[in-house]
Image (cartoon, rainbow, N blue to C red; front, side, top):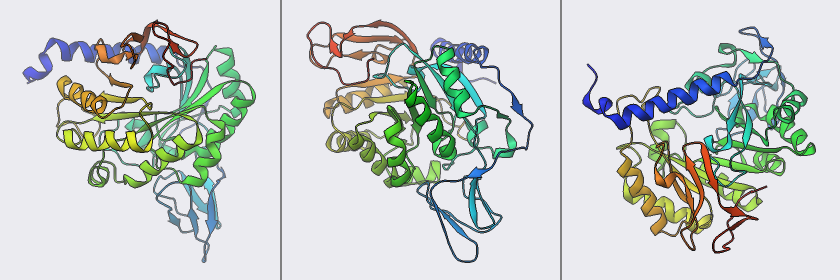
Length: 375
């Protein structure tokens, strides 16, 4: 029997909104040729080194997998064939047009659309993954779309998208395709960004960033224990990645999914906010998003809205200037406010921009400069 918690009008309204948005996005899917199930294109991988006995070491993500001949790395998307490493995901498993606010990127070309791509597999194992049908699949378990980098950029131009996004699963996994598309998009005046778990090694990250205009990082929690238990990963590489991105000058935003009883401790949120302030600065937008039961973590309820409001207040008390609440359609804190005069800079309802009061990168009331990518 359905519990009273799920019968409450607010919960039902939120779920209906997600369903409507999902249906709308499906209808905007792009027509593409499909590769039959189980057929994957192999291309030489980047960032690896040879080891004795025909083994290789993958240097793409923090795991640094040592892979024997004929075997794959932890992600299942990189394989040792004859003592050389190959990517099995040079291509994508999904392509659709989304508002940039869905990432969320809220200080980056507001109100515009992105042509978004994702593929199979991941180097994390998040128990709460909303895109588990891609991230938890091996390359053979999905259908690949036949889209070359040239076609991806052409379609962005044809559909009037202002940017190309690499998202849904972890972009590190299809690094080779991401790199080729991003470089080509840059040459054609199309902005690019990726949404990441921030587990990429410094060298490939630094190679990719010059071809990126923005990055949205999931900061999933602020303890190594949380990362180990929920994602089978680690916090340290994530913090290092955040610092590298910020130092590069590429626009950075952070998303924190707040999960009841798991990463909602106010003391940890305060510590995280202090770290962001001291290491990345006060201008980095931080988005606290509402958790909904998904994948292997269905025993917990959605995040109470007052928990999100508390997290936001803590972050603002610690000096962060641009803190929003996500996955709560209609909440006032889904909008962006001027830290100088509290004027509404960008009024949003979920992923829809209703007002944009930023002119030439400044608040149109007091003239305060607002960091971001506005044109």
